[in-house]
Image (cartoon, rainbow, N blue to C red; front, side, top):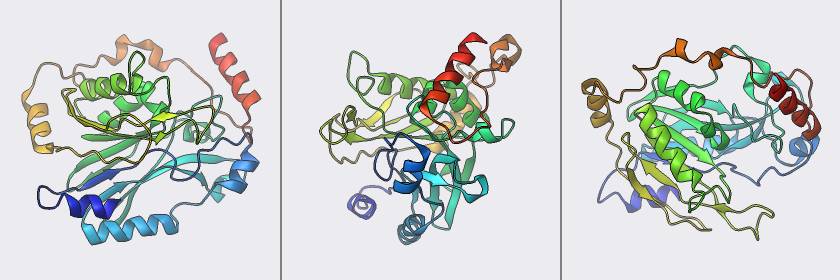
Amino acid sequence: MVEQTVIGYEPFFDVRLLVFPEFAHAVPIHDSIKKLREELAVELPNEHISAYEKVCKKLGCYIQTGTFIEHDPAYGDDVLFNTTMLVGPDGPLLKYRKVNPWIPWELHASPHDLDPEGDHFPVADTEIGRIGVAICYDWLFPESIRQLAFNGAEIICRVSAYMDPWGATPPMDWWTVINRARAIENHSFVVASNQGASMEGYPPFSWPGGSMIVDYQGRLLAQADPGPGEKVVVAPIDVRSLRESRERSLGHDMISHYRSEAHPYASQKGISPIRDHPIDKSSLIERIKKSRRS
């Protein structure tokens, strides 16, 4: 798909950044860490990342990979992450682990669980722009995407398996609303790639696709028609225009206008980091209830 896209559009423009949806393997519906580790978990980087690196070097492009359930031996066998990597012509540029798992269903850990004070939102400074990424449910937390913007991101990739009924079609088209809102409030391009799969393949959920590119003013530059199946959507990203706008515009610059002291909720404790692993559904539900009480 990468080679066909880059070569197919070559007479018209250069495709330099390609973004894939969440889960580069089967959807992790297993009900225990043990099953996830046995059936899906891999260490990163691996032979798949090497394959991405090879094609990036050949074509001069950058690939934001689909996510992998990652096993990192440094954290033992009871901790897994949902992880994507940005790969360029010279190799991997960043590794991002989902900070906000879709609890209580997703059993993998947040890096926040293991390092509550760490900076978990890396941004890669590349020749085509400063690129950051967040995964699916992360985007319902404005603070997470705002942190990428404060870390310098100009292009923010959304790697998603965002399912119905919150997908790309009215009346609950959260997918479109959130992508456009995050682009506007962070004055950034958003490149959002979503799974397009039918309920027949993954009951009880289905994923509506609708991958899109949004500019820093919230304009939809391109969108794939919602529905199952593989689709490619392309659009121009003018980073120079974004930089000129950030430099020129005094209004609607929500980053420089941000009043941190006016929002004390941001310093209050939310869902607490977990120290006891493996994670299971019952422990996640208890953590949610405890956070509500606090």
